[in-house]
Amino acid sequence: MNRRQFAISTLAFSVPCFAEGTTITLHGRLMQPDGQAATLAVQGGKTVTLEGDPSTTGVIQDKRLKGLTFELLGAYTPSGAFRIDPIHKQAMFVRKDGKKLFVTYWCAICSIRTYTPGICYCCQDETELDLREKID
Ligand SMILES: [Zn+2]
Image (tube, rainbow, N blue to C red):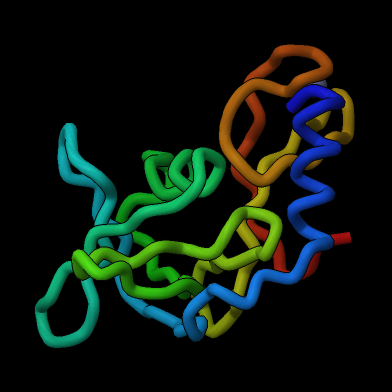
């Protein structure tokens, strides 16, 4: 993210949006069908197609998260897909051993934490998946 994009996202964050629907919580297992959008296998044998902003999509397509139990905040779209809230709202959690974990990515060389998979913007090394109970 460059400085300009950061300024824009900060601005968007500070302006309340009243057009949004009610946020609901969806629980299920993350599925990643080949060549298709990620889905969530929810109770009752249903699968729900997931949507989100580019950073959110990066997380749900991360192969390291395949098959894990997720708790997602967002809203259904008119087409029946589930749109996850924007990445800055911290709308994705992994449920593991009774814990609710934030999905984060960590560069140990630079001590930089990000919230979508990819290379570290500082050293260009691949960031590691780091599921955490708290974000410092
Ligand atoms: Zn780094």
